[in-house]
Length: 190
Image 1: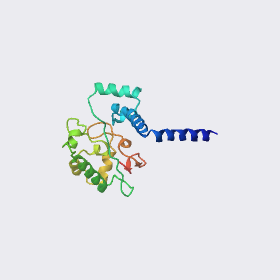
Image 2: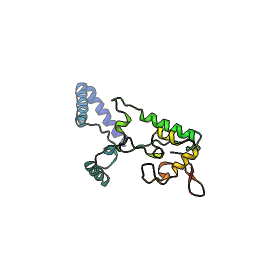
Image 3: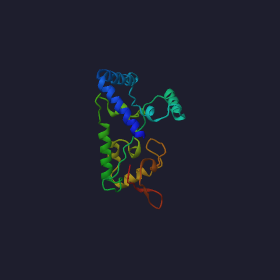
Image 4: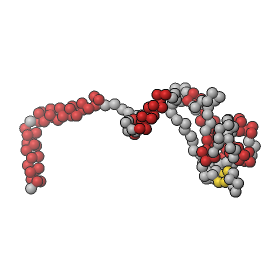
């Protein structure tokens, strides 16, 4: 029954459209124009906090307050690195490769000419090293101080970083294995 009513209504609409094609086209065009008026207010948003965070949430209020009172940009980012063989990354050859990756990142320059040193977290004496690199400083410092895996393990088992801040191995390494004394003997990720 309902099918017949719909069928008759569509047949009637088809006849009216066939008798008045220009009016039908003009009405369709006008409908498209009315729907297209929404594009006048169209704007593109790419800021993740505007897209995914409720703008009236406590988190947004806290972030806006922090942005208002504290100068800064972004947040620290880290590369998570595992050994190709899935083994211990605290071996001499693997640490040398990790430091080479760090040097490659530091050498990057973007299309506007900004270098890593222009955008890193600078604490007055150079870019801040986070993660396992913080135990050693620069590649030059690593090369002068570390001669074996024993030197690497000695560094990552210290209670403080060279800058004097407390060091916690689990903050900078993953898949940690410890000996009976609780000292780090290997890690699968940094």
